[in-house]
Image 1 (cartoon, rainbow, N blue to C red):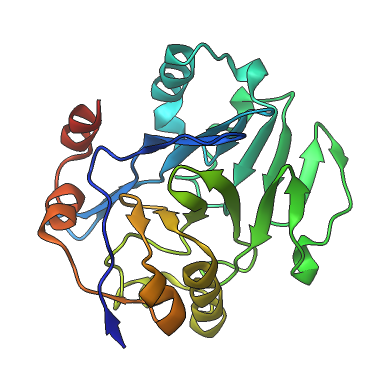
Image 2 (cartoon, one colour):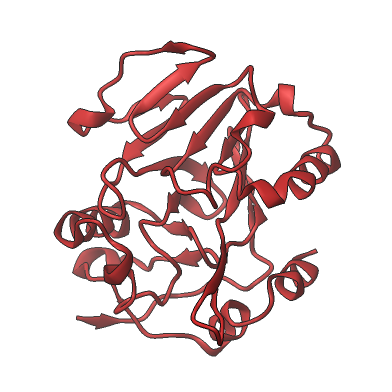
Length: 240
């Protein structure tokens, strides 16, 4: 099924809420290079409210950027109470060491320091810390997403690489450990979220018609094509 997605503008990366607000600190990217390699970094998202939550930390090369971004918001690493790695790839969890006092969720592991906590993520159950950490496997065997309700845009899903970007149909399958399982996870995300923050691109909105119809085939937008094919520094300059 081919459907269109009502895309958010490039600078719509903050979603205030009465209880929790969501801010994209860095838009992830994946850029093929002429020598057959590719440059990639994961989206970094901050959730603020009664607790301070960081979803994905970017690669180790993002250390200075991440510290500066937090300090611009009056935060130090010790202020972050929960760090969620949507999956275990290096461009998403490269800075976990900056947050030794936080509760950390990576895949199905929930820990603080060397103490691991029982949870139901492996059984398909959400881990609730005010907001919901939801199993969303497929890209790897233990992906999770973070669901934030009640923002100005409705329910925001910080999805990691469940969605590479808004126009990833035909490409996400090549990066998936289990395409059938990931398709189920994607359908559930489209059914329940108003906005999805993907692992390597800009946030995008899901219309009520798309939620009723399901499907993940996306008609690309020139605006998103522009953003997703620019050097990361140009996109970040535009956002700031």
